[in-house]
Length: 246
Image (tube, rainbow, N blue to C red; front, top):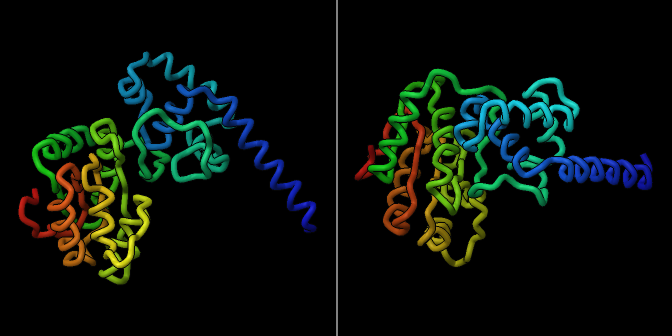
């Protein structure tokens, strides 16, 4: 492929993305984002305070505009076009606080009691750990709670995946990358995070902490001490053992 051909392909792709972005209304983007996080039509209706039929109409328009036949295909296509969080930036964005929560292609069904319990506990404490064996749904519940609480954290809900981390000392560095904080040498990564989040109202979701439990606990203790408006929701096969943890 020649340089001219590459440029033509890039221009076409950019044109497709821009066209899709221009064609979607702000409300359609809101519905699309909630679809991407696995909410059902009923839940989207409740979140946006609009009728079920209105949600269905928006979804019908989304499928048509994105050339998709199902909700899943619409989400995949929207991700390809850069219309979802974590994709290429676009001038049209959902109208709620920032987050980097992972996209879900299926709805979360039958966990209403657990979701309500977790949210109630987060109202009362600043560190909550969901513990249990692998595969029981800790991550899925945590990410959904993060989305549901986005309105309570105007400075963002930030998801930090620690599952692939092989070096415990890099826990703070991974948090910096997830939140978009730049280091300020000679400050340590934890000090930089503490300074950046000092007075901000943020929810940090630290996922899969069990293999870096000690370094995560040390990090969490320092951040909770330095940042009075930060709340932390962790998932792990064991508790962090930090004072005040629920």
